[in-house]
Image (tube, rainbow, N blue to C red):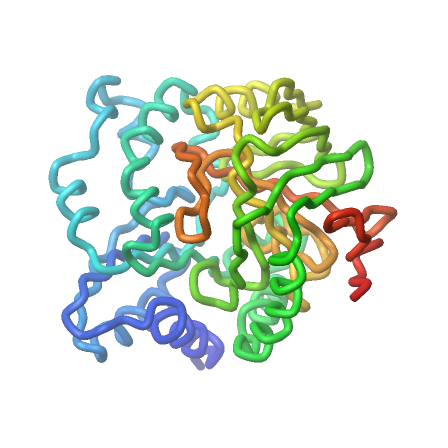
Length: 361
């Protein structure tokens, strides 16, 4: 018997996250293990009188380049997307990623030069999405590789995933608006935690509530700090910094005048430094986010979920979001999660607003 939660999940993606309209062309990136969700999504897109443009990728890649192509093609071929792909990216009305990789580390051994070249070629389409020129959503579907990464069996991972996404998002949005209102009034934010003391400005930068309209799961309030304002040290020692396929442990960064001037890691440091050196904007703080999803209480080694964990914040190096005042451009956008539930705090203009992961207002 089909799992009714899959149908509910598909409706959430098509009807809330994207709100597909008649005549739209919707690019849907998926991996084979997500077939049950993909089929429901295609049905719903069709019922709305729109066109699903389905692309399969076996790795967790947000665009349909596959590792084999990237390994074998001449480097100059990676500098520009295929003309047909470019046409699609220019013309699509919406974009979806249904993530369910067969191997979440696929592509980890691809030469950094090749990965950087591809990322730069894809950057214009990333910027189109970040500017919200088209609605988009990225999500995950229960599959063995993601369950293994989380340290859970597949059944337990299913229960966790649906518990994080199938929420009353209107009600959650109302809760998060209270947090947004407090940070909207702040000029300076200070983050204090284990090996961390970081300051940045939010002056003139309103935040946004993620209540299930872009990432799924939603459950965060996020901002784009003023580009030259970040000062201090941040250490991501509670959890690895993970962006498929890269897993980097013990990340530590020091900011001056808004830029990362020192960076290190206890493992896979090369992956960290390669991304920070990818382009001019990669060393700036592009996003500050506050985890607010009540269904996420533990680390899953999946940033899409981990960044929404209650009592955590996340900081992304690289591209910011123009829709909320961000001006930094980069082909990098890497969210790293910091747990504040054990001795950490957040201050707004000197006032403690969160301590040990609990709100004080």
